[in-house]
Length: 287
Image 1 (cartoon, rainbow, N blue to C red):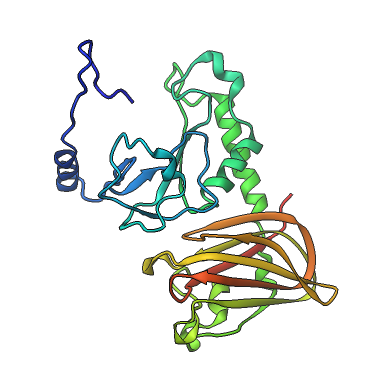
Image 2 (cartoon, rainbow, N blue to C red):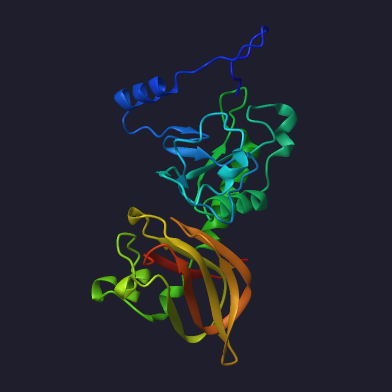
């Protein structure tokens, strides 16, 4: 937005600490957004995507509104000192405000789907701007696209195929943190390794060959974001074949890959800052 520059070229100076303190006083549960938070950060673009690597951390005392190195915000800071997750803000139209000239330029369902996978599916929040028209209502073209997205996502995530599988882990920290926790639909439970091991794997076995092309993984972020690198492999003709790799996971990571038919899948945590805490693993076959 405008930074308050006037005809004399002087920039308006904002008392951000006073703004933040006022919000905290009168609306303590409000979430404040800017390049540097203090609660959520701008993702560094308005194109609708977060980085494939995306830390919820930021060097909070360094980043400020108008931060010139804003491309850093796409991935966050691996060495961040503050928990300031990214928020992807993008408009359903080319502009942020309603113009009748853009009625035929509303983003397609497929484009909105891509934005979902590249924001929510990359450990970010999504703020999708929907401008109201001159009647004060959402235009039918925007509404149609939104409802189409809802139908598409319902189809994509209709059946979690992982529920058909049995799961084991190479290590677990007792029954309370067993491998089965990743399939129990409870975000508050999770699998973790014993002896603080920073690597480990989970193996899912299906009774029948199953086709999959999408994986969803979640960390238990109440205890921080830990995973730095992971992979998913499928057993094909008796040999393990890596089908997708990733870096950070965070609250939610969704990855698509070519359709693979298998009876065994292995999710390997290859690098983590501390023992991994995996709350959810789901597999889908999307169209």
